Length: 298
Image 1 (cartoon, helix red, strand yellow):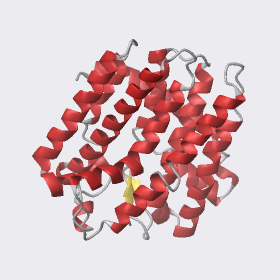
Image 2 (cartoon, helix red, strand yellow):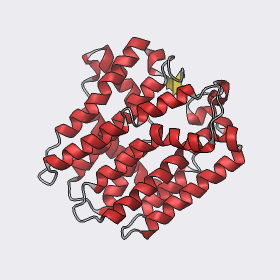
Image 3 (tube, helix red, strand yellow):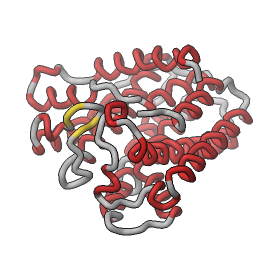
Image 4 (tube, rainbow, N blue to C red):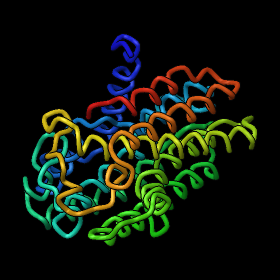
């Protein structure tokens, strides 16, 4: 895919980063806020907020761009909080994230824990403070509920727990799919569903199609991550390769092999695109994102 075809991602990224930055406390307020800025404003693909912006544009939601941007920022903050905690020695024990020292290595473990603890409620605070005449309190509560469930005991937290418990064990492909749905897919699904809530005349059947799209997209994204952990360039992916192998974790390449894993990712990406093409919306940019996530190098 030509770089010119992806210029819309750069434009969205600028919107996303501006919304996030406006939502954060001042960087120089404390050591914790310094760690928050360090961990959030350090690049990243911003895939979850990109989905929110691209879907909102595709289905022509009934709220303002500013509202969409704040919801996107909230979704990304939940993701960022999880990365800080996942990198901790008690979790995945990763020293690098996005090409720089992990939060606990740059600061210390206590600061990293507290920074993550602060970011999660901040994301929900952002949602509660949105003022938009076309966003009812009822819909706002539903969005908060979606994000809360995505990162709770039946979502991201459970997925991370299963990931830790899977070390030195051989999971089946179905068990791996379920683990990554909880750890990664649930938040992506929440991002998709929250946009559906912003459209008054969307049909339930279309919402179900978007859910199926999100699940295939999320799994394809994770499989490509596993592949890059084997074949990726450390400078491009921003952390050492073979980290999962060194921890004896079950991954798609360890179960299926690198080639079959990549084929599965590409197949899921094509299936996700096919679902989008069936919908009565202009989903070209979302389809481009599907292609990108299975061919990316970081």
